[in-house]
Length: 150
Image (cartoon, rainbow, N blue to C red; front, side, top):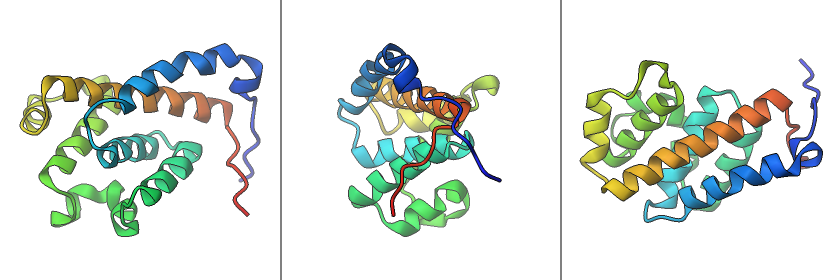
């Protein structure tokens, strides 16, 4: 199937694109390790089927030192044994439930994430999940074309 970009939000309404940047800056600016933020970005983008964000965030994760094996197995993190730490598993479970928010965030997932993070860090994780979900919705709806990497 050929995917044709519908429009460029950045070109049509740069102020809409710019409105999301402060949320992204906040989410990236706290004390949570960048690798954990990459896990949120990749997992939410997988769930939302956002090829553009997956392309960008897997590239960033590799550049940040995340192994290709770990990146490949994010979608099946629950079955990956001890490849993901307890902290990473808590972040992935949290990212999934925030992304699929219709069922809420369970007490079990909330407790898991609270075992590893301060209040401020939980807010940062939540804002990271919120930000990537906004980017995903923009790019999936607009069918943002993948960058040429040839």
